[in-house]
Image (tube, rainbow, N blue to C red; front, side):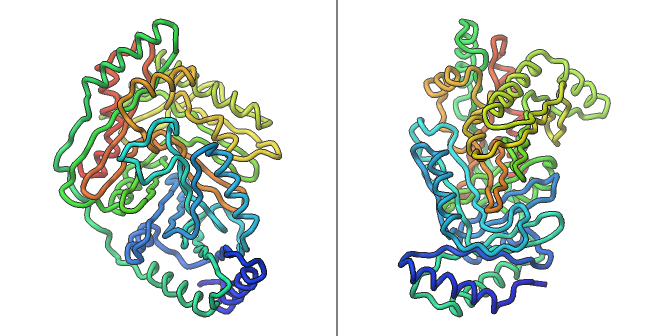
Length: 461
């Protein structure tokens, strides 16, 4: 049962109109209500009827969903992107009227978005619709948290608007979003696959090992691209549905921008903030799953005792600790990693918890953490310099922070790996690996092939 009455909606809208009149400025208002059980995927699919861009986020292990429809406000930043994004977000919250009696994470005014991996790299045509820092406050948001369902409506109100007319428009849009089909779209199939310069990429791996052996770096992460042709335009809903069933323990996401969609299932949390408590996780060191329980246990054991993977993992753990030392207290880190199993892969995993000091925000942590050694390298600046000069690829949002923030000072960001950019019946998929002094180009190439599997499987491969 919807707990916020239509009369209250009109009253809140009237308040916003009055505020717009008194300030002679557009007034943002956000209204949250609890609703009956609603399927996030069908809500997402129904949004196509409104002709608006969509956003999707779920933490599958926690059964937490945020589905955004349309854009009530856009936050974009090119220079000093962490500071400017945070500055715009804080101003928006300060000026907005926010009606949210629930205060649970993911409700109230919420913004979802991401950043490019490296803003100093000239943007390619492939990523022209995705800014270096771009966050959307959707017009309509479905949130699922701890078995309860909420809808938030965000509206920019002008002094000449009429509350009844706005309320009727909101009601009609919500009815459209709730009147979904019982079936979801079918999945497409892969027609062809084109690896982008694989030999050139392996040559770059070899140059990276030479640089490392000259004591000019310890680790350099290199990414590559595979271009996919599909039998038909991809259904993003079908892709998300397949991810949810096939990739447990992942952050599944989709960000639409004018027909293009960046989508993926990342196992790697960058940082989570709730009630000033921070959680960051190190997920570095990778191996395939076994075909039998015995083989799987053997691979897990070897991963836990492999010098290269343990070294790569320790790089990231130490970096997270150093980043949190500046802004946090009560930092806690387990002594040893454990195995984090996924469908196609398994990783070394270490959680890092801390308390955020007053006066700091989640953006301060993101700025310190990105890029992690698992996506950039060690030392950071030296490895990034090599990537900029040698990697024949604009990573765009691949490997970068993506996530959400709410008006209750909660938020969560993941590292956008196991991902791809879908453009109609085509898609660019991305995968990378960490190059160290004894890396073999062919072996690193095979590792990226394993990391392509999650995206290939949900696209029908």
